[in-house]
Length: 222
Image: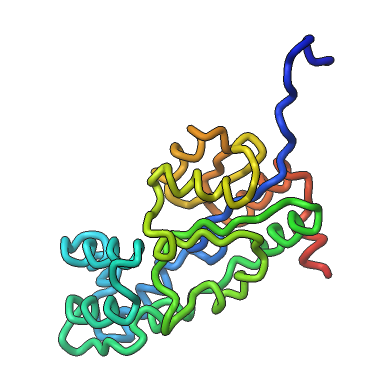
């Protein structure tokens, strides 16, 4: 249908903004349970310490925005987990067996090949001594990296979405954002961004293929 006189067409999708953990990786929870058992901990000890323990939550929030670095977080969180838990590379030991989401990475690669601009928007869990982005092999896929500890703010702060759009050089209406936490989606939607809740990898990739007009399968086959 022709646009009415004076109307402006909505911009076509030009940008893809991806969260990291749970989007570009598999769901880490089963790996974390197995790791806890290997360390002589209860299977839910990792989740409970980071999410339910007040000091554990405080330390993780401080890590996300760069108030402490990963080494300091390793030392202080190991002490919360148990006296027998070594602090050396704690984050790396817990995360290194989490598989990368290969179909999602292929989708991102196909979008980039089709001319879309890509942004990684991640609430960080540190980059040294364990760099999760390099470990998963996804860092170089992106034109723009907005990592919470490097910018001093974290999702769902609206300012971090505004910063991502500014770095992409695109309006919100031209971008798709994918995250596995529902609370991180409304601030993106408020800026006109099409928000997608990541559930299982296959259905999320299929939804993005429809939105972006690309095929992850073609990228996988390369």
